[in-house]
Image 1 (spheres, rainbow, N blue to C red):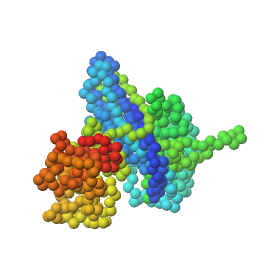
Image 2 (tube, helix red, strand yellow):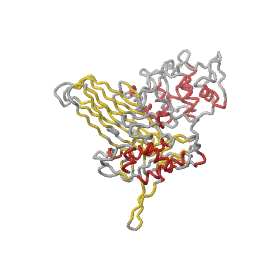
Image 3 (cartoon, rainbow, N blue to C red):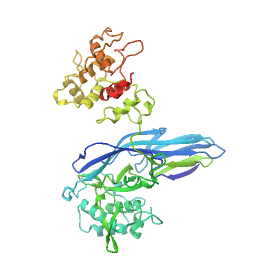
Image 4 (cartoon, rainbow, N blue to C red):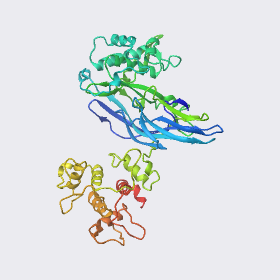
Length: 527
């Protein structure tokens, strides 16, 4: 068995990003603003250039971390093909493992991972008096205080350096500021023999690249008791990366030169705060050039310097690992960036007739319907009465305080209690004569028509709408609502001019009907 490890630092990305008109969002300690949407695609191409089969191929690829920083949201992921399994490394990096029995001579295997994210500018609004020096009540993974490869936080040289910089200061925020300023001024950015050598080499030589700045900063703050962690991704400068060599012939951006690493620190009562010690101002004073600390990178990410997060990383986990038997394969990577969201996150609905509507609802704000995880949506699964109440509550932002569900089978501990209360209080849903709601009962097309009619107050159509099965025994109570639903372009019937009011409605159908209500462009598509 042969083993090759290919350094990733993010392979084959297509970046699609788009501007969104969203107001700044304020939290207790930070403000988010100026959101952009990107689609990140990692592409790995494995080719057999030999004359014999390559056998027993195993590819392990770092995946985007689902736990995002406060300035980024993961909107969806599309993994093609889906990994045989998704695991975590010993240090917590999410990884996809692909098992390929063989690769024939001349055969090419393409592994693509695509992620849609919403990325913000962020500013932490923190005063030192708001930060406690007591970590005893904080639940922080101990590894964020421990030494590791290239982060030698227990080495006497780094320990003494950090203590000398912070002196008698005990406030973690002020200690972090002092170390930020000192490293920012002390280090000189330089690729070359001293790059990517770690914190100890950085303190000895005073030079390195973003990895070395990050390693030294993390090692120094850990040495004085401040938890810190690595973050890897991309540094995108919109005003600078708008021409060759970044812009490619197809209009996409080659982002191989945008790879970047930066740290986060954990502050008591605040949480994780972002910073980037790598960049320094240079000020001309006569014939001299002097460095000045760039405080815009301490607790801030500006709109002109987008930090696009991928994972929390580790020196050993930022690699693609390839194991195989037989001839040596050829491995190629590509990395591009373009505007827009180009991710469809559900592998079981990628070719489904309701794909566009499902995508519309998963992107809708607030999110109306989601998947089951692992790239599954279940488009043909039936919808329960509780699930439908939850969807309508999200769409209409109902006030659940207007009434409580007086149903014997819906207790306050039930997951859909508030949604059912809100929908009942608004007069959208009702129960059964025996006093139950039957939250797990599947919804029929007749029930859906009546509930949607109440929820959206659909007008009665001017033109005649009719189905041969209107007035069907036991479902005549829904006839008027069915006519309104069909007459307004929300629902259609089946071949033969029937509506099938007794048929169970699927998640895909609900997605289509809701998308047609919320966006008239979907009414042009009839199902």
